[in-house]
Image (cartoon, helix red, strand yellow):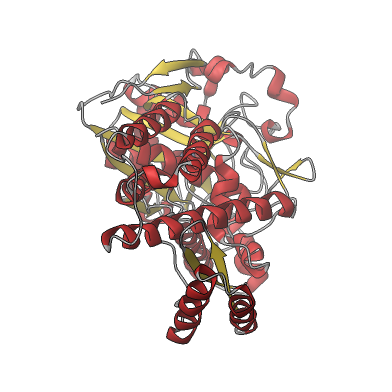
Length: 482
Ligand SMILES: [Zn+2]
């Protein structure tokens, strides 16, 4: 087992990763989507990195229990608990029920995960199915004296949590002017947040429940604590989310957990930087976003977006552009061509069609590349460096292709891909018709006999039929022209 280092927002330091409870089982909670609108590439950046982190832990011999919520209740248009409920607002707009909206956009979210080879969480749970758990937490907070009532709901008194203002080393005094912490007249402190909101007296909400305090619905910040407690226990290993959760949502989760258990919910708090488009944060609310399906419409492989994401360090912001994703698409295709070439070589070697050099010692080189790759990722999830190592391995093999065992190369690529999940070896390959294969074989024989005119004629014929020959020193591959 290697040594993983990761930046912990809670301590503002890069720390050695040491599991909290069991030495082999990691509890990981990631804040999920509010399912009122389509998932876009801005959100997906976070989900890709969470997937990489999870797969890296598995590669380091840990088991990971991954829990994610979907917010289908209580997320208001302002993070400070004012404005409309995002779900109810969208339901009215689309003339559907809140449940239909939640169902539709949850499916969209899962479709996006699938396109990007992101492994689904072990538990993906909607907030509306955990009302009892949320009420239980609010009751506990009430008993401990953290709760006060206003005309529109129950609020958490953040002044009662000693370290609240310095969680993630943020100065909450400065944040007062932030619109997300806007003051509601009855709140005792600007940073206090709603635990339970009463349904408006003159309006019947689609989602509302009875509680000891009156009919209403839970606030957004309680659902993650409720689900984390239920599925991962009161103190677990990793809590992740986008950097937008640093100022409000995550401190509020920590405050509630501290109040109930005296512990900050998770040991490692990991945050992923924003995705910018035209120098502004990509977001649903501003309308400044691109969806994965928009890329697919441009005939870009969705996994190219994964390559794009991995190219920038997770704590930095990344600049999105179609051109950048297009160039990741080309890079991915180069990787696929490389693996097709190696697959062809594997067959040629099997049938002893090509002479290979002393390949045994080069297995060591491949192992070293893989070790360097894991070390880069273990060093605070340095994906740009890990990708660089992959590219330099490909380039070194290309320079010396007959001195590596093709089977070992494919095995190593698969090991890289157990984390990268780019389908490097197992990508979809266009079936090459028999007729094309025969023409290509004839062309190759003509070429070897130096009958170049005839071989060129066949190449043209193959091109007209929509295929191309990729020539290498002693062999060739065929691919469909796209
Ligand atoms: Zn959350």
